[in-house]
Length: 148
Image (cartoon, rainbow, N blue to C red; front, side, top):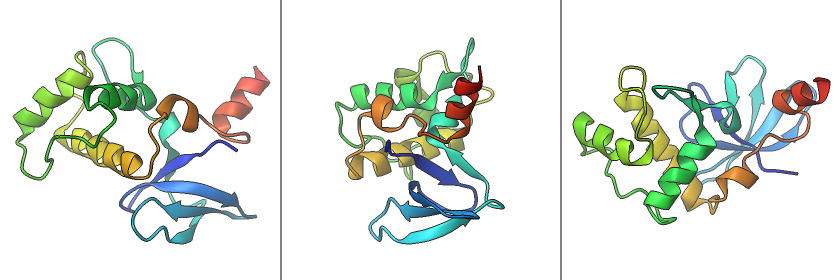
């Protein structure tokens, strides 16, 4: 089964889908604790494979942005200190990753979150963003593709 990495609104960090229950998902935190917990239908759960970044033309899938960031950082954690960097420094850094990003719709907080997520993924050995993070069987995207 492909790894599905999830973001859950209101909960910090990222989560890996471990199992599917009858009325919930079992997720494991991608932090030092690796604590498992249920995520319910009332939680706003989003797969990273379903997220895109705004650009001046088309939206770019988050996996492509993460892959570009990986190439810039040569597979290592981000060199940008998001706690100390100014908004202008973050925008300048992100322009190296995604040169034509929409400067009005992509906020500094979005760039910070992206860099946090990238560091979490690298810390957990998840660096093959194109392969490891595509939707799994039974996900909405896979279901839609089969229906077409």
